[in-house]
Length: 418
Picture 1 (cartoon, one colour):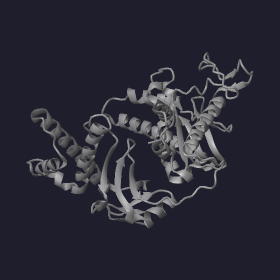
Picture 2 (cartoon, rainbow, N blue to C red; picture 1 turned 180 degrees about the vertical axis):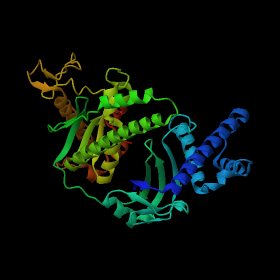
Picture 3 (tube, rainbow, N blue to C red; picture 1 turned 135 degrees about the vertical axis):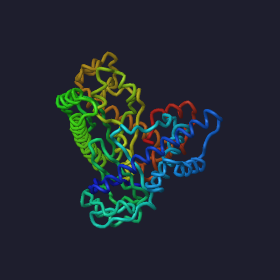
Picture 4 (cartoon, rainbow, N blue to C red; picture 1 turned 45 degrees about the vertical axis):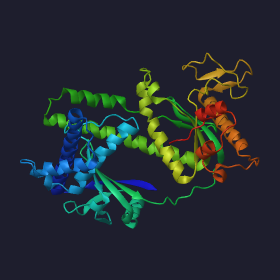
């Protein structure tokens, strides 16, 4: 299983100069090869493959005035071509945006070293290529031990210069995740994501939303806008603002990992809604608050960690009325507005907290789906677990319902990450 370990490096002045040249050359090669592919297609209706792009890079090195390209490591420049091909495949196969030219004015730059451009790690020093040897780095003691012990399994190393001028390496390794979680307290839990409380689960736990210091951000933005363009003072203000954004992102990342770890430690099956984030962002009154939640990042972390530790995720249909249903009697309260945080069921008289009620309904919907799958495969034991029969996706794939229409409906409300 692939796992990336991020470390901060502290190159000396000579190494910093080489890194800057390497990042600039990688960007230049990427842009020129992209322009070459676009030009070939526009003029000749011909799609250039990877081999031809590599030959074009070789011809660039021999051109007059471009001999400086040869000063950069050929393996890193070759990786830029691989990244370009990957961007094209994403565009044609996955519907991602068309590859864009990289700007030298973008303060965040990166390049990738393949495994054969990586020398090794000794203690807290890493060596990549001849010009970047024994660079001091910092990370947790646990990650440092893993890097030293399993350095033979390194697949690639990505070098990144952040907007604040810091340098990081993301070391991609092929490792077996050996950590085993204890037996979960709960077999299934439903979670409701929101703005007032980031997460409320069906067991009554609440995870609060991180408050961003907007006043400080606005102040730094104003200071930056007042500085003269291309001046040293403007650059100082830009770095100060970039450092604040990095701090906010680091706090969020740490908090999201804490939440995911707790959910996975305590629960075997986690049921969440398939939220339409793009649609939610169209509400201009709530867009900034929704964006600050980092819901997509939360789902990404939850997905890969659940795969590591053998937990299961169920996504219910985004149109399921989790907030409007009474979790006791099933009455649907159509008039519920966003301002109502509590409501009383007209049918049974139960008083509901909006978020907790939604989490309960999400759990019940997840349990209903599991019960249907249990009947499909003929398991009548009350000790039914997904681990005994395979993943949720396998159940959907291998155990079709008799009715085609029912099958389509079930697939709409029963999706796993990925």
